[in-house]
Length: 112
Length: 114
Image 1 (spheres, each protein chain N blue to C red):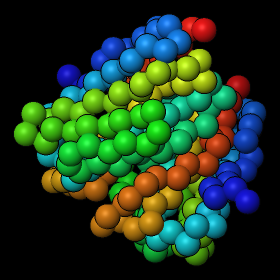
Image 2: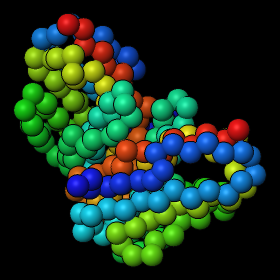
Image 3: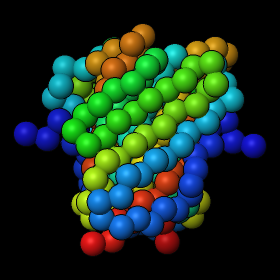
Image 4: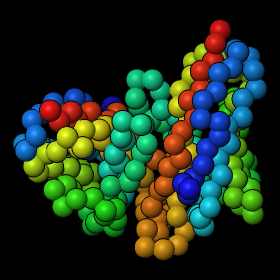
């Protein structure tokens, strides 16, 4: 079992829909990152969270440390949101403390 | 100005060759990283450097040797290339090691070993 699990693996939505991508982890973390990888391959950091909720434009990220769970929401989705969304956690303990462990990504396709 | 730049963007080479990928960041960050993304698009940390010092070396074969001449540069040299080294290699940086803040990625270097 991966230490970082994302769901769903693939998601197709119609333009305008509200989208939720989930990330669960099984290790102690100091922070959680949400990243976006566009079809061209570039990776952009969307959020870094250690508690609560952050909002940037149409994107909202939440984290529940007790439940070891984070969600990324996209409101009023648009075809340009089509990308792979990757959750990554920063380890709190152990030999790899400070290391980032990545989920396998959620591929989002938004149809016009 | 590109914040984190990698060269080359594409690299095609034969098995057994030695190659290097260069990375530079102009953000004044203390910490730099190399990540490998395999054919299934799974990202994995290879190395982390903080102020030119190696922090993490994650079970990477010693054919891979990172070099950080100063904290703005982290180059990756690969000896005796193997087919399994084919992947996209991403360089990234963050402000500091203890409290990373946002990560900034380079555009990736696609290595194909024939």
